[in-house]
Length: 95
Image (cartoon, rainbow, N blue to C red; front, top):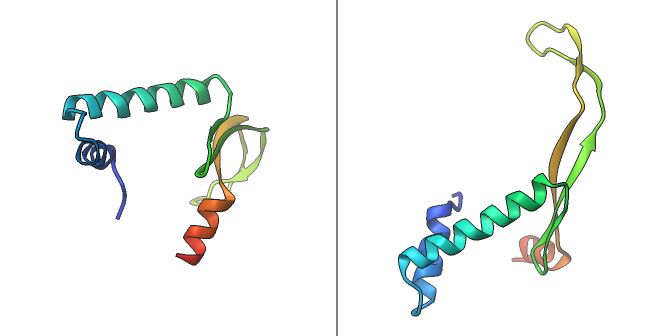
């Protein structure tokens, strides 16, 4: 099962008596907007106890079309990677 944005909104709404559903939506949207802006600018996003999202540059490199087997050059690009915290990694592996 995959956790969706709607699931996050619902969980925040249910666990906080003082917040309305609209407030939960605004909070999730604000967090995601700030996170995206930060990553787009090239900065990392560190969430203590959860992990770190980083933006890495990949250089141009040789590739192959899997359908035709033809060699080609893949453009340089930026990718977002995630490194879980030790706490999260231990919890995932040990329940």
